[in-house]
Image 1 (cartoon, rainbow, N blue to C red):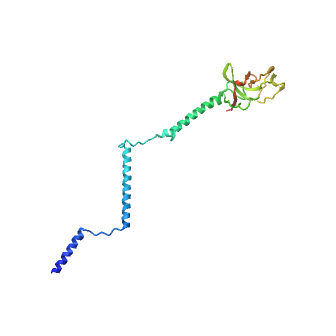
Image 2: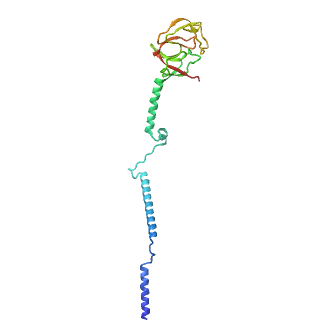
Image 3: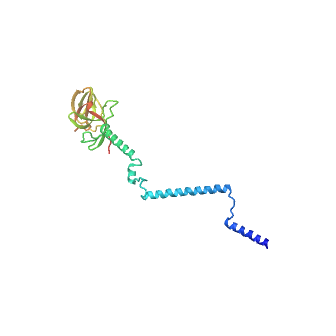
Length: 232
């Protein structure tokens, strides 16, 4: 009986111990490493979740320290991604255009019929101020010039060069006693002009429509440049 009682007591103690301390398998080193990585991943996901919550709250206006710059679509389309550089380029373009069309390529509008059939009334053309930098104006060039007493730009063709003897007989031009061909004329007219000698810097200019055109003696300093025109 004592043996049975002792056995029952031992079993009861073992049963209590097993209830108090449940059996667990021994932790393997590889299992511990995996468990640590899992904890790290869980921590990273929690950090990302916290950052996402902060961003959402800042957008809603709960954190005024965080600033978000928003550019309207029309401004981005007009000024591009860099508005400062766009304004600089616009200013450079404006300055270049002013210099180009005021001192280099001067736009003019033909008024009158004295240059027909080469230039027509109302035609738009430009005068290139740099055309005579390397060489002097030549015979047959259409030039724009100003007279000393008239600020208006006049457009005519050069017929006589400095130092030449020029004359007109029945509309035909004679230079130094010899007639010259003018293929750009449709009608020579009937001019009669005695021979005269041009000065060292004087050019004889007139229009292609000899019936109504006038003649001018122009100094080299008064010639602005060569005319470039195109027909519509």
